[in-house]
Image 1 (tube, rainbow, N blue to C red):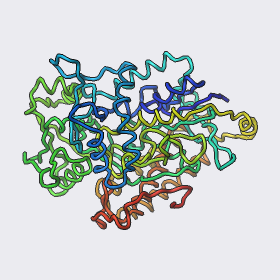
Image 2 (cartoon, rainbow, N blue to C red):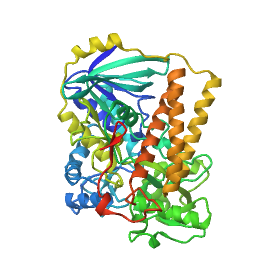
Image 3 (cartoon, rainbow, N blue to C red):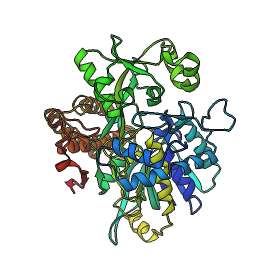
Image 4 (tube, one colour):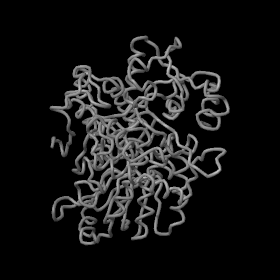
Length: 533
């Protein structure tokens, strides 16, 4: 048994920001399922949207966010987060993040890029590897703090809750140490979920392998409310390549003037949206999907050759180098691209300060549904939301004495079936179920949906989820089984939410309900313990 004042599950920008702030109040444990740098933050190329230019304004950023959110963003939340943007940038700079600056300027000035859905250049970045640099700086600050203890290779299995005054209270989490395959209970008076999203539930995704929806699944099993799970953002431009098929080609490439072309070399975005290549991601992803279905092609092209060789190498060094290693010189050749699952706008429902409806359980970042993104996320608002909401949650954080709960809980808790690596003949069952689940979600619950495909998906996902639960009960937990159980839980939630919404809005497009219905469906869907709220 390990006891701390604050427990953080996840080591991305939200979790590390919160840990650094709460460390001034008490002891903090940061739990991460792989290495400390494995997080969605580390893979973020674009940057952080913030009003940093005299020609920009909070009102413009708020308006762009609300427009992209298609009527479901919470105006008060959007305003609060947007207005915290400049302070978030300044805080990151003070922590050692060295953002890109405008070249050849007399006064040092941040270089701002523009991405889809933005009316101004407001994306602060570090070339095209912003997330990696933020992660690096925050990890360095964490290692300097004696009040923070890091636990790598610990996958969270289930939250520990007790009945308290006013309902359930979270007092910790059971983790599986994947190096020695033993379970460990961590206790804390305050628990933050910062576990990222569930993009790996789809066969094609821009997410790292760790994005298996652990936080959403654990919170839902524990009795927390989840909202807006039908709104899955598909990034329109990921590299189509046998080796580098999940490599993301940043939104900023189109923001700097790159063009989308069919394989015949014809532009097509103007047929689908007035902003053409600068349209919001959902519009671009659906346009590419429509072109591919009409032509039978496997990909379209993203052409940046006209931007100039030197500009491309300086502005997009990671994209240039990665593509070059795969045999594509983006200064001379067009990039074959396809959509892939990227971001979930739904998640564990929180209040403005990150509180869930389970006492002492908080959520920040992609795992949370704060009301910021609504039915579609504006590009580069994700890192902004993560660091801003971590600030809000830390501002209300307090040390809570849970001694009266721990003694009784620790005596009665039993963790069954944890401790042995699965035998190879049993492992194949998990691999088969995982492959079936990911293919099913991609084919039936993708960019464009229909009632028929969703109903088929619901039947099959329910069977898979039942089989996986049975597997865990009879054969015990392992790292692989824990991830798969979480993926199945999230898949079932996504399908259930998608079937419930009888319209098309933002990231959810259903051929059988193609129109947006503000009269009946301009509202969020929320599910708790198997029922709609």
